[in-house]
Length: 430
Image 1 (cartoon, rainbow, N blue to C red):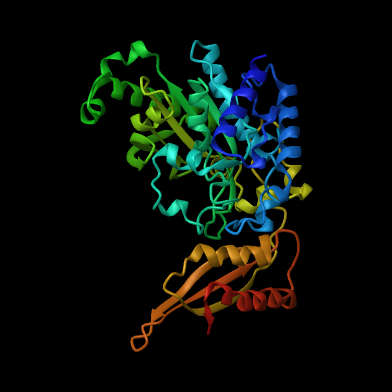
Image 2: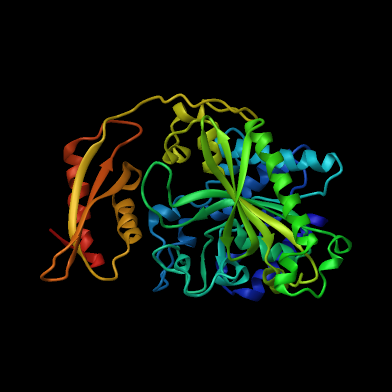
């Protein structure tokens, strides 16, 4: 009954903010409260999500401002974080296991959402989180838009206010997110995040009532929430990595204040693992929870998996090669054994750039032409002609397949197409 009510309540929210057909709710919105008691629900949720979301035509619409390319639309609905024996699924399960064990030890119960629709509204993804209209993250060079008002979520925080409005106070939300980005071994336009939120009982923060912003930030209640957040996440890091040294630094996010970044000392290096903070009072007010206080955190599953499994290239998470998938087993952290390293093919391209040139647009064009054969793109030279004032950039494109050797002939064809298509961005190839 509870699962059915949640599906209906979310349907009501989505109907209120958008009339786009892609927002048809389904059973995948229902939460799961325990991996131990809901193994059937886990796999049925993944099946529903795949069936509903793995439809490229949902994302490549004929709207004049749609900028979702086919190669991105094909990635949606894979549900990698829902696969029990995939590195991302293993990490997700271990994180959820930590919070479930904390509940069994007397802590709060965290509802679990991990099969939500990747299409969200601008209100959900940006406005509800205090991300202003002129923020670069809202530009078409950074974000994949379905219509003017809907997009592929850029972070799992896009669901935070919806769950708060629905009455949830402690929850985890995991899913695939999409952003245009640079091209190298640790960046990919589709990746996975996990978000956590906890609101505190009113009686524990009643001393914060009526305080100004400055008074709230200096209050013992705000410090109590921040301390609880750090203690929770330090426990999570020990659960994932074993006992490790940690350090905290102040950060900035529009939706939390104060905000923090956590680093761990692992395998001889300090590694950034997550961002977090006390939920901004304005975010709570917009969600109809202005009388409450709490914390939130977000982390990248690929980031953690690459560290724990020693996976060197983010593209590997999306491969169907059995030499990759056969190395992993549900519940176990094992070191990835590289099965091949084919030689790269390097090609350079240089061009005069217009004043409004954005690198991400060029990177996205390269991905659209060569797909995952593009391993990285590096800026190797740039200059401005003192007489004409025109600016030039030169890039080195590294092509490499993870499955076979590439020929110069096939890469020449791709590189020539990239050179020819560059004119669409106003680039003048030199």
